[in-house]
Length: 506
Image (cartoon, rainbow, N blue to C red; front, side, top):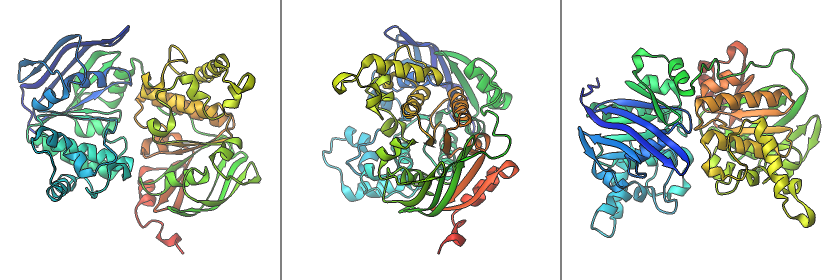
């Protein structure tokens, strides 16, 4: 049982912060008790990360006060924050890919030490002990060789090595499997039982209400509400986040008879999947469910020729096609949206307009093949308006946008080539609840316009609420198809369990 101290461990009073003319924080307030897991919720751009970056010394406030144990403190840098017992697991992974997992985990501790060299064997052993409660990851591997999920676990392990009294988690489960997330929650509860105060930033209401004692909601840079989770509902929190009543996250599903076939894949096989056959029909949203690592992403990337040497018989609108590479896929109207938005989905340092035109520059080329900037901006503006992209100018860098708007730019880049079929891998990962509802509505609208939509998602509510049919993948095999009343979390998990595809192997 977690026993919270009635006295605040951390207090943030009227924190404000501006970046030029943009006021990111107007009245940031939060109170954290020792032994408490306290959720911090809000849409992207609400000021959550800015507030936590001030706590961690990455940013300095324009006004306001930070108190620890009732005493005012000045957090001038992350090193000062660490000295005050503050640890931060950032949403964005910041590992050094060329060095080992063990060296990444103990980098901060080594930097504080006067010893110039790290003892290899002792370091590996210590890293194994830290990682053991989370997952088996070989600490000798270079961090760049790990999956996104494993890299996130290493980031968490780094924070656990610090002697923290205050621990901040920013969307830590966005890249984790359900099993990995449950391990993390168990560790969080153990830490809270030892008197550590935890600030937990998440868009996932189920996680907040399962693990947190209180929730603070921010909107437009201001404190809106703090309440015990036992006294409010998820709907109360969502409504406070968006400032309006959000009736549903999911638009109505396809009704009526099945329409014409857009895509048919027969006997697709690659290094992570075998004998996969399925069809996508006009007007529907088809989902792919299963555990991370089951082969869902590899199927999509194999069909779109982005990975491996997958082989398949592919028909588009009844006609057999040969897809030699991704450029060939684009020319035939088949495109893929990566789960790694910042790594593969958008060019963060380029403008919105340059991103939108990136897949086919011929559409915005002027005389002698030179990019017509006015035509490029006009195309981006037109597509951006259909997606309700929020940006003052198409010349703005994508890095300056919220997560939800970055995802809309990634989608706009695909729509610029007028696709017939879109594979979307984790399309709402790290996106706030309001933007998530907008993206769901956009996908349904595209489906109704005749675009084939295939969604890969690790979020059960998204698969069940958004998709008309769900194909479940286990260990590289399709193990079943679910729709209607059969489309339940229990049935998805049963078909996704390891061994569920054993009978399909030859």
